[in-house]
Length: 188
Ligand code: SAH
Image (cartoon, rainbow, N blue to C red):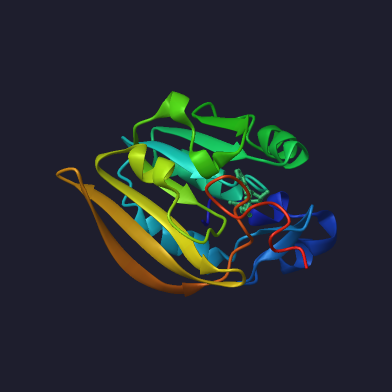
């Protein structure tokens, strides 16, 4: 996190706050996550440099850049084309990071199975497609719960079974889609 300049991943008007430990708006009602939470999720997926990773929710591309440093290959999926496009431009020098425009609530089958999956948006339940796309021994870290308040979970696939740990409370923007929140369900 010392190597990657977070201020380049936030809008110019927020640059002065880029090194504060809080989320910041990146447009389209989305945010770049709080650095503490990014660190917690990255630690929780236990990367050693050899892994193939899926990130759901590219947003600014900041966490994808960190994943690029920590893993062998990263697929990152974003549902908002404009955010994907600016993240792709930010990540141009990262040859091991691929930015895709898609609904990641059903994962990204073409790259599966993954050693690790990080979801940067909250869903009401664990999307079954994501645990299916985990490799044996793989880790899935994601926020699950109500709109505005969730628990960060780590699921680990062990001998075909999934073991779940609770890493504590958090608050993420909603994961949109079939296996997340139906679009409009939270817009009241
Ligand atoms: N990791 C990001 C923070 C992402 S905020 C960063 O480092 O900046 C969550 C992102 O998830 C938003 O950009 C939102 O558009 C995206 N998102 C929400 N639902 C999604 C879905 N079903 N598939 C892919 N991306 C989704």
